[in-house]
Image 1 (cartoon, rainbow, N blue to C red):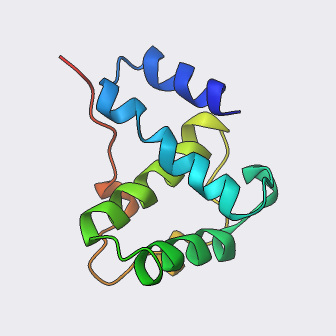
Image 2 (cartoon, rainbow, N blue to C red; image 1 turned 90 degrees about the horizontal axis):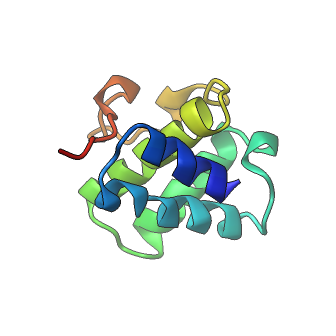
Length: 106
C-alpha cells in the first residue's frame, strides 16, 4: 500500500521531500497495529494526531503535515473520500482540507 502511495506521488512529480511524507503514513499504520487505512476512519486519524501532539510533542507545522499526508493517502492513494468529518480531526489552528496541498518539485 505504501508503494502505491509512493508511485502516486512520483506520478504527480512530487519532490523527494514530499515523498518522504510516506514516513508519516507508515507511522499512522503502525500506530494502529498494521490495520489497513481503508478499515479506519476519523476517530483513528484523530487518535493518531493526538498521539503526535501529546506524546511525541510535535510542532503545529508537523501536525498539519501529518494531517495533509493522511488526507492525501485517502483521497489520492486509496481513491476514497476521507472517512468521517475532517473537521473533527482538525485542530483550531490546523487549517482546512483545502489548505492541504502536496507540493510538486521543479
